Image 1 (cartoon, rainbow, N blue to C red):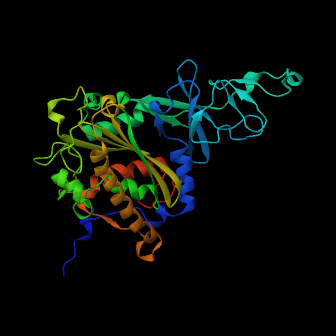
Image 2 (image 1 turned 180 degrees about the vertical axis):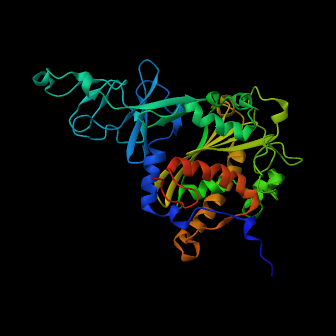
Image 3 (image 1 turned 30 degrees about the vertical axis):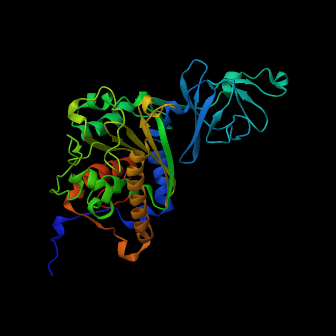
Length: 388
């Protein structure tokens, strides 16, 4: 029996990076509470007073539509005694955000309106007790926030990732018109695995021929992806199999195409991880967006949304999206099961120093994903220790 020379492989992260609460605390500080995080779609907060609540690290954040139609984000913390202002993950605050504890009330733009017995405290400037604002960016209908006091410009985080995936063709992404698409289906998955295990899975297809029979039937290039240590995404996209008209279980779903696409992309798939917590799949008749919610070192919620042109999912539309939704739903369940196969063994003595990446995994996972992770965490890639 022969074994591959050690130089063929590159190491993964050590096992404790997927289980250790101390590592997760560092991730909160350096990633979840610092970088731009995807939190919702603008469609989720369509009218004044509508809000979405999301957890980022140790904070909860509200995204609120103001009376001026502007989106804003705030920490979900009353300035009085720290009560949570909104107790549900989404809803309608009406004309004001009102604390359920002592009834302090805030404008939808975060300014304090009043509080019980305020007349006895009228020497206090209400402007000093506005809600704590959070940086917000809306990009192609996707809403991102950063808890950093001075975050890097949003474009500097997002565009290099998109350029890497699409070969610098930013117009291609714009042609999919994400901001104009509407929700057709949402599924929340509770996954008993660390968020990095799931994202590493999403970035390689070395496993596709083994666990994704429906996917490789549709995208035959995924069946036996090969290449050396410089193997990366095909920036020209992945062509559907001969005889497959759509990205669906049957391959024959007849749905309206997204307007504005070039003929070149009519039967192609593009998938991209947008760090830290988003995965986007571009298809000719719909777009799939995953959002990762990092709940604990060993649990992740993945919210998957299937987005379609409005005419596809209109109430009287003659189209059935179930066939298209089912394909990636199966892929999700297969990927999340595989992630859960791995998670328990992250604590094994056999995985103390981690595993290995084969050549086809190395460019995207080691040189692209791990490099970002080490830099974000302030780690020394060689020793995996925190930089001083």
